[in-house]
Length: 132
Image 1 (tube, helix red, strand yellow):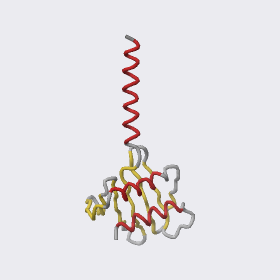
Image 2 (tube, rainbow, N blue to C red; image 1 turned 90 degrees about the vertical axis):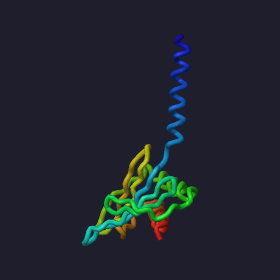
Image 3 (cartoon, one colour; image 1 turned 45 degrees about the vertical axis):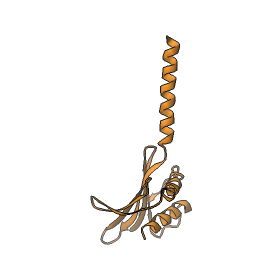
Image 4 (cartoon, rainbow, N blue to C red; image 1 turned 90 degrees about the horizontal axis):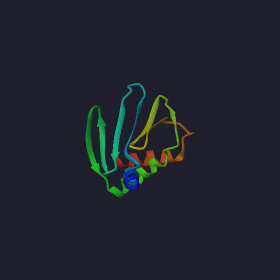
């Protein structure tokens, strides 16, 4: 009876681990810029299904849907930044916020910052290009 209980427990644990591994990685990336005299912020979100939205206050305005392969590629680039931390705001700022079940991280830097990781800057440029 102990052996059957042991097998049942192992089966449950391994199914739980498989599920967790399939759900890892970013689910959404928020990005944009703002600050300055007015303090106005322009924000966008990209989700893993390719939905690209502009965020205005409490509203999410659908801009377009990009192909899932492109969205997944950008989200994979975002996930690669998991161990990088940067929060050095200035008068005018850029930001990327990664939200997932694994981790949440927000990066903020001044528009003229030169000491940010090139991967972060490239990700930001790639994300902003989607909004055009």
